[in-house]
Image (tube, rainbow, N blue to C red; front, side, top):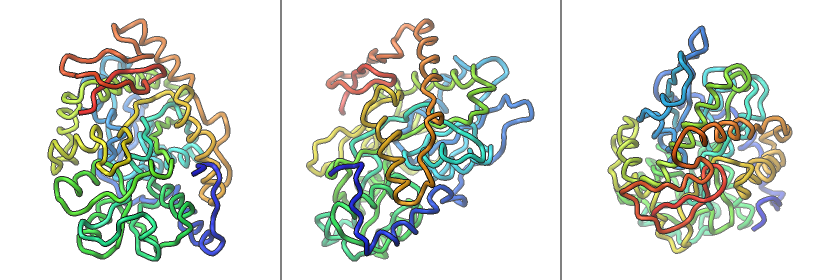
Length: 392
């Protein structure tokens, strides 16, 4: 399937467009945690993150460790604000409530396309070949066996999320239509359990919990089947980038170190992630499945690829700069693609160069495995190059 060339069926494209048009502002009521702006002297910076989005768990590694404190300039601190979906973080950024955020590809693009509070993409929050966010599941006893079997059925999806983009791609590829029910990931899983919907789309680790821990659902397909990748993005407000640049670079230095931990020290990562109160009902096995173990559906595709530099990670970089904006514009979610100056890789480049002189490990390769890792494969690095990690 060609990710960049939608072949919309005229009979269904208008309804899909209407469903997608408000994605940039979806989910404003789905907040968890507190909501507050930065302090008057702008030295408390609010970080928006999704604890229920495993592709960007380096944010949790940062939150629950002392990594950011190593790099932040004197007088600066980080306040972490959780959200159920990336559109919520994007909304907060658009009104100046968050200064940086970790979110999926679609909300990241809508965030940098808005101009209420200008924001720019400074990095990736990792990516996958459709194994993290592009997940189609059904009740365990469902007669649905193939993706095409959802034709004419009611399908739960979260508007404004990466799953939403995937569903539209999937419908185009199969030339089918469904009744889309817009709701949160938790409600999708509840509706599947109660038999109110035939299928749902979600992301890890919530899907892994439903499949393995709760034994309620099963995977039908992922984006790997359709060559539809998913990625995370890290937007920052231009105010943070331009007026607090040392702090912006410090956040990205912490991001690079946290991504190294996520990639190379699985047990430490799971220890830190388990401290997140929002994930208190997830057992360790579900958390491990959500980020490190591949879905057992025969596609034989690695669960997660680690990357922060969208200039050097070619496929997710193209998604964020070309095919994603083109698709969202064609579907009516964006009036126009984000302008080129909404992409600012120079902040990451400066951070990596400075970090290279300050640490014993290489920010550009992040290839230093910890003592409890068993290296078995090479994966895309956090800022270009390769790192080594296990696939337990």
